[in-house]
Amino acid sequence: MRQGTDTCPVVSQKLFRDFREVLEYFETHGRLMRIKQEVGLDDYKISSAVRSASDTDGPAFLFENIKGCPGWRIAAGVYANRRNVALSLGIEEKELRTFFLERMLSRIPPRRVSCGPVKEVILKGEEVNLLALPIPVHAELDRGHLINGYVSGDLLIGRVPDTSMCETAMVRMTPLSLNTISVWRGGGHLRQLMNEAEAKGKGMELAAVIGFEPSFAYASQLFNPMGTLDELELCGGFRGGPVELVKCETIDVEVPANSEIVLEMVCIPGERVSDGPYGEFHGTYGGSPAVAVAKVTAITMRRDPIYCTVMTGVPPTENHWIKGPGREAMAWANAKRTGVDVVDVYLPPGGAYVNQAIISIRKRHEEDPRVVMMAMLSSGRGVNAVTRVTVVDDDIDVRDPKDVDWAIMNRCEPDLDVIIIPGYQSYEEARQQHSTGIVRPGVRGAKWGIDATAPLKGKWAYQKVYVPGQAQIDWRKGEQMWDGVDLKPRPSGPEVIPERHQGAKPETVDLQPVRRKK
Image (tube, rainbow, N blue to C red; front, side, top):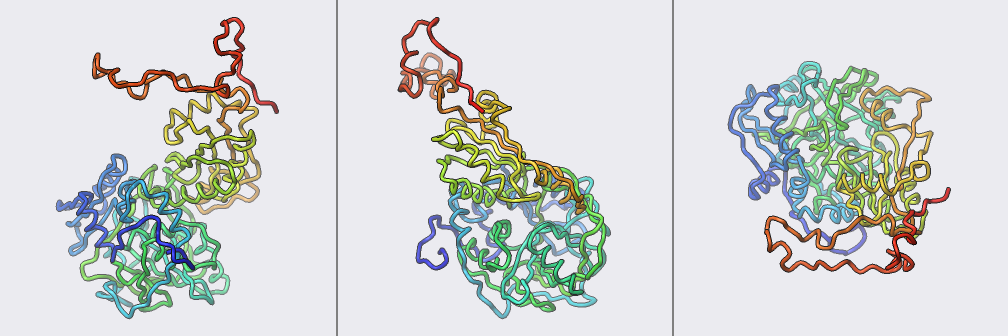
């Protein structure tokens, strides 16, 4: 339910008890492949399988025979594609946008419990051994320290000081020793909290949760002002019920009680270590000369834990599908708030489902495209900002690159319809900063938008050529191809073809399109 109302959810979903029940649900729907063949952590069998599933709408995987890691299993590909995302939420694929628009506003407070499955095994002090975790290598140039793999499917939880609220994020980590680990800080609220604690000479307490309900991952990718809500309440809203929380053993943080694995840690103030190369979400490699270091004070887990890894790299793959649906829903809501008649919003894979937006509208006023563009381009900063916007008419399929390219070529005057906004951090600079952690003072770039809509005056001259029946005819039916097909021209009025041109002699028809005026 939405906070403060008794409104029933628009989209009903299956309420999962834990990560294992999600995997069972996948298997019931024929979307989980169990792999009993032995696989190694550094032989790329796991990552290549997920890459294939991402590229071909494939299933999730449960690897049950991990070389050198007896008793461990690895789940992968849970977020590999749009179909898996919907399944992981227990909803229909067509309901994704409605679901995210609704659940962005939903808050369900967590429920505290005294114990849970994640406490079945508790390791503290000298018992802590990060090198026993089955962390697979994803990409050929990935380089950690003691191992080349990175923890990539974790939910990092930290408490906001002097409140009961928690912030969450998904960040990469790699073991540095038996009990120390690097923590990529990213650019979100947890980074800010870590910096504030370090400025006071303190190490921030963090819990990295591995193997949790996927709804938590999606909730962690939404933007909310820090300190305005407990993000575990947002996780509850996404799962459709309260998250059961249990206290950590050695730090003042609470974690989902039904998780598979939890790493309890305390950041070491001022200590830094190099990071990377690592295959980043924008599809190239990144790294940093200085990321945070944390001491792991405890590991708690189930007796037969399932380690979940999350693939990133060239979009689209798991990292992008975790971000994409929520970011697209936020973009839709942002575009609709302008008052322009928005038909569809699409964040394509070329922009990692984050940095590029294509929006179709029913244009009522000539300035409508720019109104939408400015709203989108001012909605964020850094590597997670929309920096490229294309606005098209409602006869263009925003998900068809050929259709969008046609609109740009035929309905865009570059000197009039392309706007460039200087003074922002460019996508390239933001990407490099995100990848390397290096800020170059004074370096600025730009954002841009393309108006690929037809002008309202003389719009008929910008319409696509249409052949009656073109969408219904199937030549493979031979002489029966026309059976039952209406081959009449579509109704068209003066707003489509000016009356003076209807039935006129060819030499009297002015076929020059109307050019926009500056």
